[in-house]
View 1 (cartoon, helix red, strand yellow):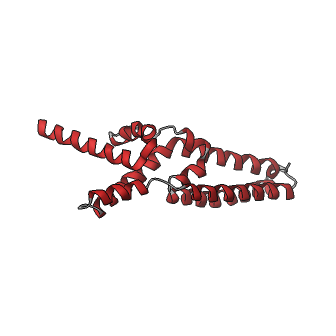
View 2 (cartoon, helix red, strand yellow; view 1 turned 180 degrees about the horizontal axis):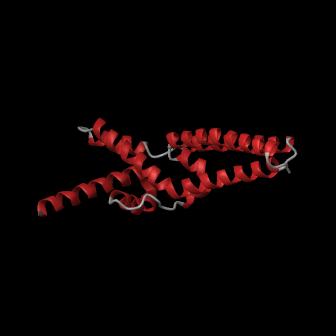
View 3 (cartoon, helix red, strand yellow; view 1 turned 120 degrees about the horizontal axis):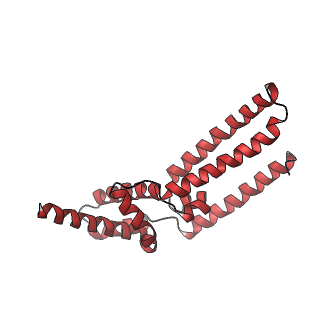
Length: 185
């Protein structure tokens, strides 16, 4: 039994060393939550950066799949809300659309922001474990290549972050122009 416990401790230490290599300087921020996930703890873990920098945080961590899922969800949910608001406005309550759409879209965005803020660490953990396992398999006989590949898997470099920031500014400008054209001030 002691041998199994010793191997488990060695495996956990190796796993945490892989996490540190993958995370770099941010490891102290994520490893406590990741240990909890590994040990079967709750998947809910607050991440202030994921909360306040939602889409930017997902992009900076190269979590493109989750980002794409979020965008698709919004592209489906917002038109459904608009159609629901129009139907209620036309057939049940007058002026329902005028307050329902802005309120429901804001609630949808706040809900999704809170969701990423409280589930972001879990998303990042699942992505990291997948990348680490794939990299370990790819470089099973090359420890230096493994370390280099894992270090380069961390996140988006500064150039990518600047590009995202410019895109976000353009999108915010377009959203404000759309609201202005609809006279929703």
